[in-house]
Image 1 (cartoon, rainbow, N blue to C red):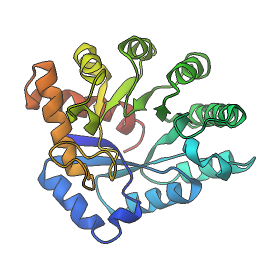
Image 2: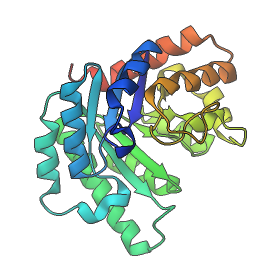
Image 3: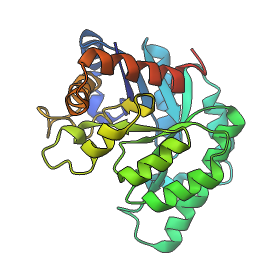
Length: 258
C-alpha cells in the first residue's frame, strides 16, 4: 500500500475526472491521499472532497503565495474548518522566496507562517510546510517556533546539511517527482542519507509529474513512480519503501484523526 501525502485534487485540472483519478490511484495501490488547501476557499473545498471520497483526507492552511487572503480573522476561520471531519493537518503553509523578492512582504510571510504554526499547536495537528528558496529562514522559524509540533518539509529541495537539522527536530522530508528527473542534483544525496522513519512520498499533483509522465498532469497514482526511484536510489525493494513510507504517513497524519 502507498499513501500520497501531498496533492491538490480540488484544483480545476481535476474538475472533469476527479473520481476517475482516485479510482486509478486505488488500482495502483495508493489507498490513501492527503489533499491540501492553499487559501481559505480551497481549504473548505478539500474538506468537502474528503467527505465525498473514502481514503481522501484534508489539510487546511494559507500558502505563502496567498498572503493577501490573510487577515485578523483567518486563523479563527481556519480553526473552524480544521474541526471538520477528516482534517488531519495544517498546511500548506510556509515561505516562498522564489516569487516574492520584496523584503517587507517576506517578513509578512514569516509572520503568517508563525501564526499558523501556533494554530497547529493549539489544535494539536501536524504541519505541512512549503519551503521554496527560503531554506535558512524556514529552518530558523521551525527551530524557534515549532516546539511541540511535528510535520514535513513538503517537496524537499534543500541541502543535506539542512535536512540533518530538520531530522533533529523530528520532522520528515517529503519526496516528489523531482527525484526522478535527470537534473535532480542534491535530492538523491539527501534521500540516500535519510533515516527510514523521516521520509514521506508525495505527488504535489497536478504539478511535478515524475518521469515517465513529466510534462503531463500529475495524479496520486504516480506516487508509485516516486517510490520506485526512492527504492532504486536507496538500494531497497519497492515493498520496503511502501511499508515504511506508509507507516510514516500513518504516524504523522492519520494517528491524529481517523
